[in-house]
Length: 251
View 1 (cartoon, rainbow, N blue to C red):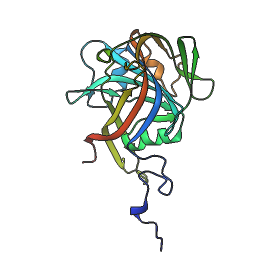
View 2 (cartoon, helix red, strand yellow):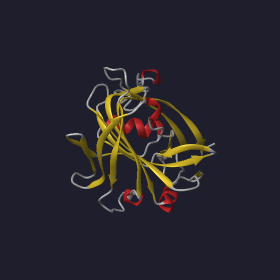
View 3 (spheres, one colour):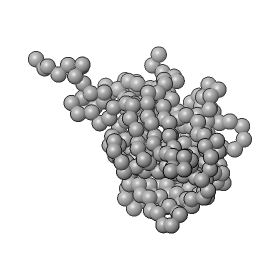
View 4 (tube, helix red, strand yellow):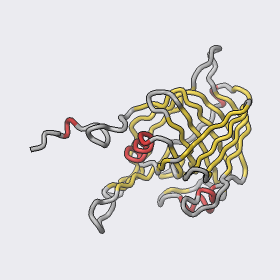
């Protein structure tokens, strides 16, 4: 008779050696945040049923995140189109690439982030940073280029809406519906670091987002920029907590 009971399970799988526990943090990270306009029809085509675009241009947020510090060192590249669901503003978490299994599992299992593993690099020269997101190695899906500008006060910091994720867990039995199918609002908070003078480390700059390869394996190029709007660099921590189920399709 097996003795490994539920009360001994980890918070996530593998039950005997969990990959993560919620809540958790990414510490001392660099966050490159871009907002741009893209093709409205292309965003409408990939939004989940029930989500809508607001009137006017279609906007997208691109985020590149990198930390080498404990407790979860990894890098990530994300593309999030803006939308609304039941009258509330969100960004749809469409494209999420990370470099560590713990980061991929926590996003996919807990909130439903559509994450894959990729190769992400940041290259600094002077006050400029160039980032690449490759899957497989040598095949760039998203690149960004940023030049650091002036440090800005906290009241001028960018404000990205909360993320809306599609949590999908298939059935183990053939022909059965999804075991779990939900829209989930994730819970993330970017906490800027403070420099020696007491100012938050938030910088406005000039930036570009590029999607150099057109592939239907993951057609992220269809959300390429028409016009860049803003670009920022923020140093600090990212806190991840419990989210909220917005819609459960199995009820």
